[in-house]
Image 1 (cartoon, rainbow, N blue to C red):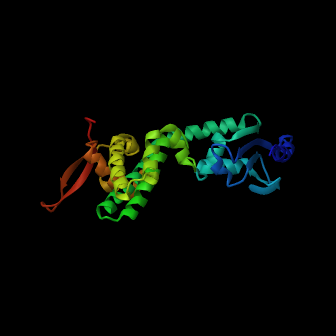
Image 2: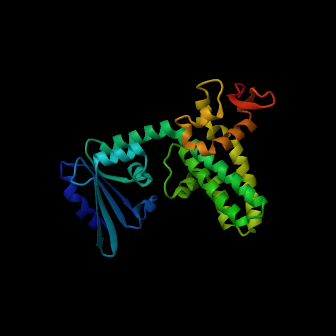
Image 3: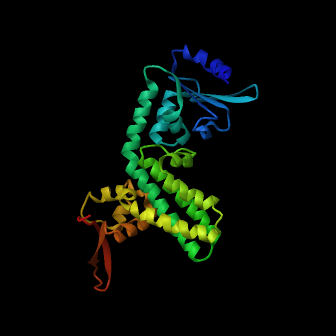
Length: 290
């Protein structure tokens, strides 16, 4: 493997067009990013004929990939936030070479972006968590156990991603490996659901109780973005909230988020009369005591 590594990157190091070279190997903690290759080598260049160039190699039954990406392409992906594998490689991969601390500056940019978007990303995950948990509970009560199982697994996945984001990290493809390290309690819930010898009914019953407690205990964290948006003015109509430029990103789960915040008394509802004296519309506002 060392020979593959040396042959692939040595010529690139001496090229002034090369800004950085990074690697990830199959046996690394982040090995899921290697796409079943023994080695993935990322070379970032100032310019190239094509924005992305990928070549696969094989040596002594080992498979490797050389990926050459332009600086503009990398920075575009970062701005759009549409490549989790790339983000994890940039944050966690091995730096073999960098010119003028290019990777270090990129990692700092990612940390800043992640920090500024953390509340929003958490609320997106929390809304999905609430939705899947609620649907799982409904299926369980209707004795549709396999559908309940499927929804609770997805709910735990969103809970896991929420925890990772809250720690200032970027959720990896192997998110449960991250959670195992940073929150053993949530990891234990997941393993008890999928590995326990208990009956499916008993597993779901226990998981619904435990996850219900976690969901309620994390309400202020999970809905922190929505609560900060609601500070912008005193009263909100639902339509104003759902059309807010940032809230629109979790608009499908806004109703269930609001219901929980009302239940937890973080948000209150004011009934406003309409022309029809027997009908009211709802106005939502923050409970200043919370």
